[in-house]
Image (tube, rainbow, N blue to C red; front, side, top):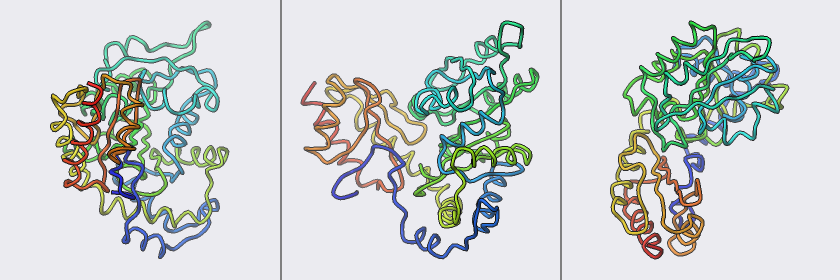
Length: 346
C-alpha cells in the first residue's frame, strides 16, 4: 500500500526496498559509454546467461530495446509482422515507422497466442512490387490479451518457420520471467526460439529503471551503436544495473506469488454486479474485467472513494496488476472495493 492506496495500475509502480537500495548505493561504477562500468558488465553477463544468449545490452526501457532490435534486424522499407494487439503495435508511439522505417503487418492471435497457419501465410518474399518480411515479433506474456502466455511449442513452431524462410524473430519479453514462471520452465526455454529478446527489470522484477536486450555478440555490437543514436548511452549506469542484479537474484521465484494474488482477485470478482471478468483464471499477474458503466467513471470512483488504483484499457475495460508491493492480505480489500464501485453502476 502506497500513501494509503492499494495501487494495482501496473507492476511498473514498484519501489526498491532497502536491500535493493543498498545494492545500488554500494555499486562499483565506471562510464558505460566507454564500456567500462563493471556492474553493468555483470548485469549483462548474468542476463545473457539466464537467457542462453551470447551477449546482452542494458537499456533504459523495453520500448528502446524493442526498437533497437527492429532497427538491427531490418533495413528501411522491410516488412515486420507483429500481433495486432502487441505492445509494439499499440503503445510504442509508432517507432517501427518513425525510427526503424519499416512497414508493419498485423497478425491475429487468440489470447495472445499467434494463429501460426495465418502467420505463415502472411510471410512475403521480396519482389519488384512488395517488401519482403524480414522479422516476426512475438510478445510473451501478452499484456493486452490479459497477461496470457504463449506456450513453448508455439514459439518453436514460429521460429522453425522463420528460420526456414530466412526471417529473424524478436521476442518482446517485457514480462518474460512471468511467462516462464507460468509455464514452469526456465526463461531460456522461450528465448531459445528467438534471435533476440528484451525483458524489463522495471516491471514484475521490481527495479526502478531498465530493461535488457539479449542476442548474439554480433547483434549486441550493432545494438550498442543504435542505443547511442537513440540517446540511451548512460554513464555511471552501474547504480541502476545493481538493482537489476539484485532483482535477478531475488525476485524471479517470487513472481508466482503475484500470479496467485491475481487468481485470488479474479475469483473474488467473478459474478459481481456491474462487471464481467475476462481473465477468470489469470496465467500471470493481470486481471481484466469489463464494466457496464464507463471505465473512467469506475476508475475515478475507486480512487476517490475506495483508494484503489486501477487503469482503463478501453471504454469499458479495466486492468488490475498484482506485483511485489501488493500483499496477499490486501486482495480481499481491493476486491471488495471493486465490487462496490461497479455495483453502483450495475
